[in-house]
Length: 262
Ligand code: MF3
Ligand code: CO
Ligand code: CO
Image 1 (tube, rainbow, N blue to C red):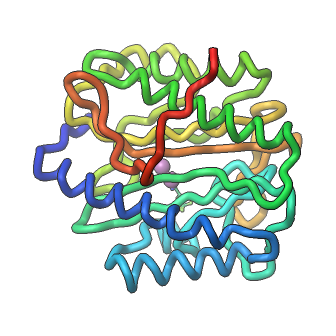
Image 2 (tube, rainbow, N blue to C red):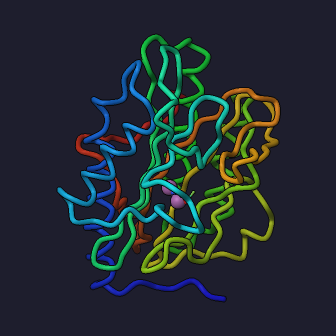
């Protein structure tokens, strides 16, 4: 059990994989509209990855997952299975999570989309979840710990009366989809032992709930929902630790940090 330090050559491959994953989310954005099915969105992304990018969709058949993306609507926390019969409706908040493999290395990213007219309380959850991601990212630098990352995320979520999902976490990533360490998003004391070093590559991907933090897995053995069936939101980036901070591999064109106003 150890956290791999990536070589400059590996980091260059992950930069490329991360950019390709970000490109999938940019490509799909205009398709995320009222009436489209999550199955259709998945098919468009699958075809883009295979035919346009020459990437491999990492989720397809991963531990039996049946699709090339995870699409998680409203009370679905993560691992929503795309479905041709599941159409987006006005007011939905939707997470699309894609992971591509290019030249044997992974890039993993997700973002929220607001469909049609979204109520302010739901929009605000999406915004605060994105702020949580960025506050976590901003803690990343050599000799900081994963505790610093988690504490920043949990503090901001709870200051807004939201809760942090504990059962699912970010992860090291590289030639394998899920590597060490586990990047918990709540301030668990053992995270103080995980000291960041240049060349470590991992994801941060907080799942933030409007209500209580509890989750359950549905009968399909994949779909994770909030126990109280209230809304959940998630954003994810893949990044590398540098001497002075971090480099995000999955940054979208024109994407800027989203941080709280005060
Ligand atoms: N992309 C997810 C993550 O951020 C993992 C999805 S695994 C799957 O780690 F099997 F559900 F696709
Ligand atoms: Co992901
Ligand atoms: Co991930």
